[in-house]
Image (cartoon, rainbow, N blue to C red):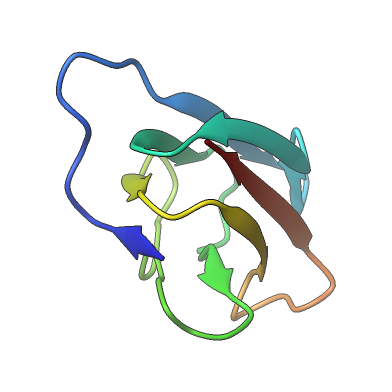
Length: 93
């Protein structure tokens, strides 16, 4: 499950949002690490867990959000405004 608190001492993995896509679409991190989403599009986007356990909320152009993942698992997500935009965060131990 995700948390809005960044992990201390670790650099987040960055997912860029460009041209209505998550780049990279799939990332793998270890439990306790973070992912940072950065929106480079003019349109607003979100990164929203399919099961809605976590959400970046709306990211305007230049907006960023960091979520820490503490529990190993696979977390598919999408943009709430553009559901064709999909990605996956895989968390290992």
